[in-house]
Figure: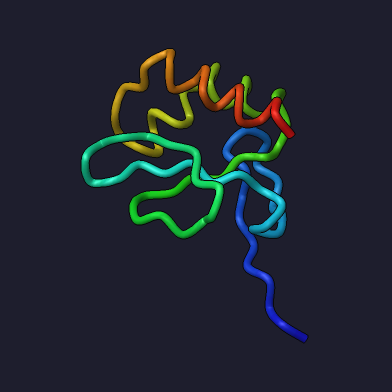
Length: 86
C-alpha cells in the first residue's frame, strides 16, 4: 500500500491527506499564490477546501505567521475565490 502524505490545515488544525487540502505557497519573490499542482517551489501552507477554515486562518493571522510577512487583502480575496470555486 502506497504511503499518502499527511498535512495539517492551518485553519482548523485537523490532519488530512495532502491531496484533500489546498496548498498556498510563498515563492522567493514573496508572491503568495494558490498552488493547484502542489509542486510549486517555495514555502507552503495547507488549508481545507472550506471557507470557514480560511476565515479562521485570516482572523487569527495564521498565514502571516507562517509566511512571516504581511498579506494584502487582494491575496485573501483570491484565496476565497479559489476555495469557493470548488
